[in-house]
Image (cartoon, rainbow, N blue to C red; front, side, top):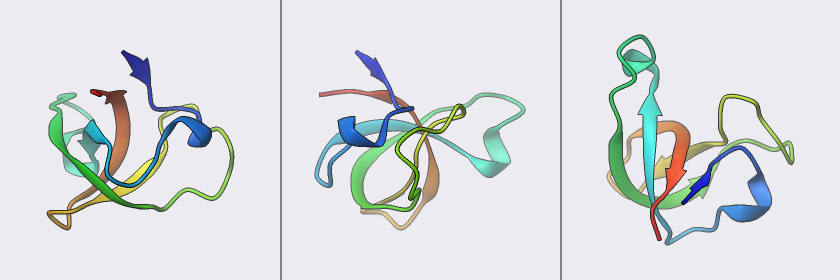
Amino acid sequence: MTDGRNRSEIRPGMNVAVVMKEDQRSGKLTEGIVKDILTNSAYHPHGIKVRLVSGMVGRVSTILD
């Protein structure tokens, strides 16, 4: 499993676990499939921000596939 801090490792269609803004304190993970990559920089220390197919937005914690 890879953490989601490098943009180059994330592609639309991948199965990932994200931390949504409201879950940052608890660290609760939400699983889903990446629809769009929202972070423009190549690296982000808290995880690359993505939009899931479900419409939820969060930072990638782990890549599941």
